[in-house]
Image 1 (cartoon, rainbow, N blue to C red):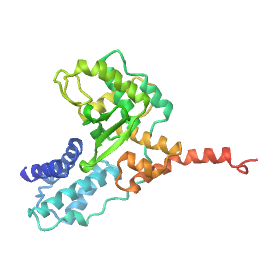
Image 2: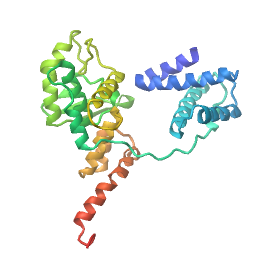
Image 3: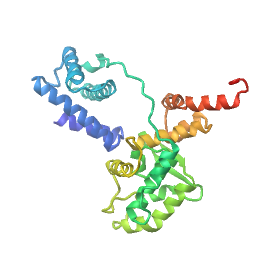
Image 4: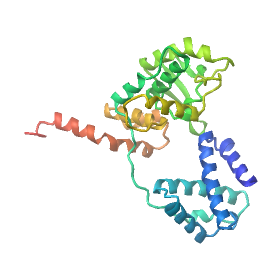
Length: 295
């Protein structure tokens, strides 16, 4: 479908969305098209009442939660805004639709001892094991998004200052730091594993078994395999490690503005969600330090 393909190209080349994000948009819109086909509706002629039936379909048949429904509505709202701007339709009917109330969910994160257990899993004697350890160490040390991680080049790394230039959302650059643990994993991988993997002589830091830049999906697969070898009863994702990075910084007294800059958030509001998960830490400090907190 030319309209959809044109929109996906717009997201990729003009909005600079990651391949993973573009794929999610595509999946949401294709699911919507399947619904329209079943109802014998044209995507160019849908009305408000049709969308209400689509919401009922997502809730009652697909059993989607409120967060998922809102994400799909956002995908379609953006798609129809593009169609309107390009003259395919006269108005964006999705701008009239409010999604269900989003339940507030706190970010899931790992305790530090759980991360330590994960760090022990990769086999440092093998190239892929060295790479997998560095993936873990760098995700946690820097708090970068998975889309940022996979595009890191060796030339982006300043070894003397232990910093990395990251190309974030909207092609905006920022500098992140890493510590000694990450540096040791980095030096091991660069001096051994990466040299053996880099049969194509490219500058990408993280390589797959074929010597090409690892994909976001590849990183997710690596993490899924690693956690299966632990006793940790949690699902894992690159973003969960990013949450852990932010939460642990705040728990150790780092200020919110610094965490915002390190995460690459444009707005402080996006960072403020992490203040909720530090409440237990605040209570602990309070009851241990305030003289009249306990008898």
